Image 1 (tube, rainbow, N blue to C red):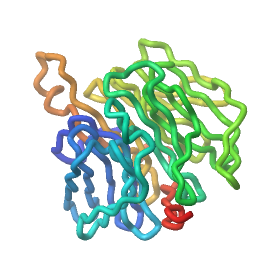
Image 2 (cartoon, rainbow, N blue to C red; image 1 turned 135 degrees about the vertical axis):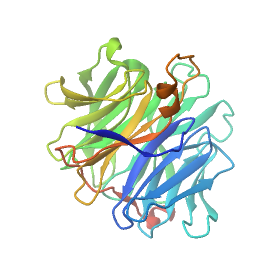
Image 3 (cartoon, rainbow, N blue to C red; image 1 turned 90 degrees about the vertical axis):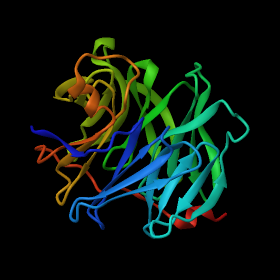
Image 4 (cartoon, rainbow, N blue to C red; image 1 turned 45 degrees about the vertical axis):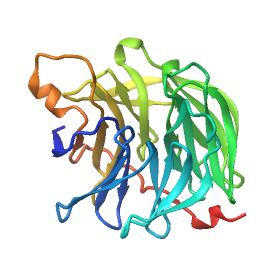
Length: 296
């Protein structure tokens, strides 16, 4: 599998890649750089939306806008003008030590996202769901809320709280968005790196980005087995998503580190967006946030 840089753009903390099939564009965020990036793979044009707060994650809306979980609020962003419309006040707005982190939409257009402490304080974060005009608490007392994915039948939701070195599964009720029956399905050795963002392929296998592990690995949630991995030239691999015309290209976000390195080529690639073209596997189209979910 050939890994290549998509564009010479180094994020401080690249995250939350989303493939927009309608525009042939890969979109992602720089959390601490307070930016949303969009790269059109057909035209080669890149555009950046600068935000006034840290932006933990994004989703696509059913009208083409971005939905973004910022530090203090969830907002909708007009992709033509950059105008920001507040959707709902952030549930942890008064917690100045917390910010939003990773998230995704389910098949009914609900937006799930998590939070974390700026200092990674244990059990200071939570997971929320935006639906029917309400941002409701779903999972409590997590440390670094990260990857979320659903099985193709939407009967199972997978979730990562990074410092646990594991993936848990919940039974998922798509009709009402409720979760139950939590269990651990994958346990990851520390030497593999911390589990961060993830996506799922059409065979039901989870692709997990490993922070500090120089890799994206493919895991079987039914057995807990690591099946394969893609090696990256940078340590802090943060998330991944399938894109391209057939959803067979794996886009991978990374982050810069503060550690020193004698290898300038490694440091120059930190924070870049990478892609594994024609990965041999296929992903699913991105679910879009339903605008009606801003209404009670």
